[in-house]
Length: 83
Image (cartoon, rainbow, N blue to C red; front, side, top):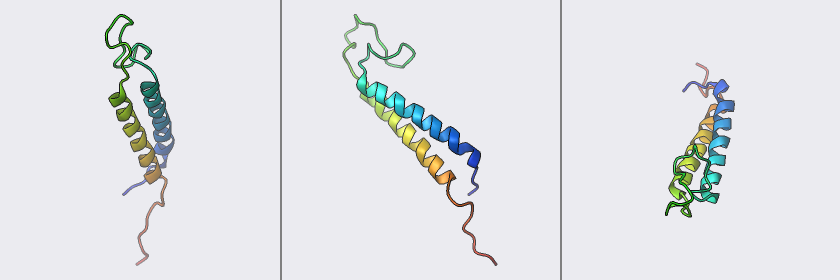
């Protein structure tokens, strides 16, 4: 498996972004979400007090996948024994 150490920092930053997005989904109601987030509704909608838990879980899973990817990329380059 080849290691590309230049991908570690972007993967960690992307993981942090998705972690923040997950927290926003868990904490905010559908009306309180930023307008560019999927699931945002107007104040007069019947969905306004609803929390989008599944969106938050999905963002959390993607964040964890980014962190795991960065962790595996940061390991030793090779474990081959000399011939």
